[in-house]
Amino acid sequence: MDNGKNVIEIHDLKKSYDDGTIKALNGLNLEVKEGEFLSIMGPSGSGKSTLLNMIGALDVADEGSIHVAGIDLMKTKELSEFRSKEIGFVFQMHNLIPNLTVLENVEIPMYETDLSSDQMRERALELLKAVGLEDRADQIPTKLSGGQRQRVAIARALVNRPSIILADEPTGSLDSQTGDVILKLLRDLHEKENVTLVMVTHEPYVGKMAERIVNVLDGKIQN
Ligand SMILES: Nc1ncnc2c1ncn2[C@@H]1O[C@H](COP(=O)(O)OP(=O)(O)O)[C@@H](O)[C@H]1O
Ligand SMILES: [Mg+2]
Image (tube, rainbow, N blue to C red; front, side):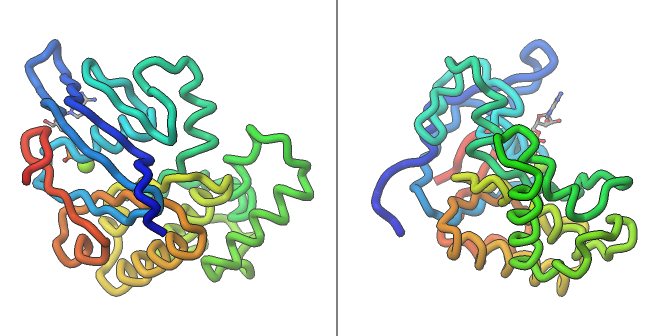
């Protein structure tokens, strides 16, 4: 699994807010290998979400360099194409669309591909099966428990076969038992689909599920 190739390379990355008063990332360096399961830990406000948003090209850094899946994110003009091809997001709040069915929610990322509606349906059902929810395909998300909704969000994140899953406090709004199930599911899917998994958490027991832990403090990796 570890062939030594970096899928994420970040050098001296800086991002500030409020005209420079808040230095969310302050010269951060990080390398992540293809197929790795990395956990990013650190106190609230240390820059974890900002870092994840930069990796997923949801936001652009001020200075430094960031290469993800071979793309120079400071230079490319195709950020949304990069996102839909390479990245699957799982957030603390699952962000499902309440008036779409479970199946339709999982299909959303495929709307930007060339797949036919039959192919989309087939792939979405495959992922719902992988997360144990194929029998819920036609329900709306409000009928599901918190843990089930997070499983739908994980299915949605994986549906386009991304090279990287970015998970920001994926168990943050769940009780610890349900959180455990979600973490094991993420880890299993990471192994099965050989996808790189970068997970932000501030809970030590959650971080320990990963192959490697890095700590962020004041917008930098601590070593
Ligand atoms: N969009 C934003 N506008 C202004 N300040 C922000 C914004 N996003 C994050 N920050 C600030 O940047 C710092 C790092 O935030 P964040 O990356 O969310 O930390 P963490 O995820 O580790 O809790 C914090 O001081 C936060 O208030
Ligand atoms: Mg955060």
